[in-house]
Image 1 (cartoon, rainbow, N blue to C red):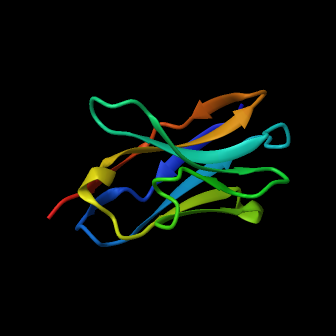
Image 2 (tube, helix red, strand yellow; image 1 turned 90 degrees about the horizontal axis):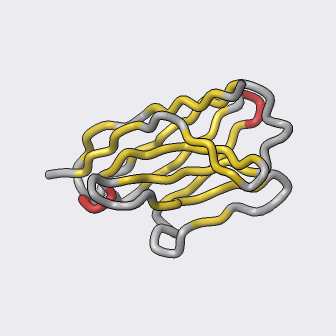
Length: 115
């Protein structure tokens, strides 16, 4: 019913910025929140940020200040602005929606930060 499609990933140099997009299709009225996570090879998936419907944005403490989550309700789009990127930010980035306390993830987009 609901489909999430990430885009905007690629190869960037340390210190540069990148903006990821997530297109959301389907009925979103039952969603409690939308957000972003990431997963690097050999590591557990890490939560990045979320926008609860009717509430303020939330960020992982380690990323707050560099990453910014936003939403365009008219276009059913969600974004993740990433600034001052570091090599350790390299990962597959996923968008998700939260329904009944469970997160449902998209396919992901690869971000590689390397000199």
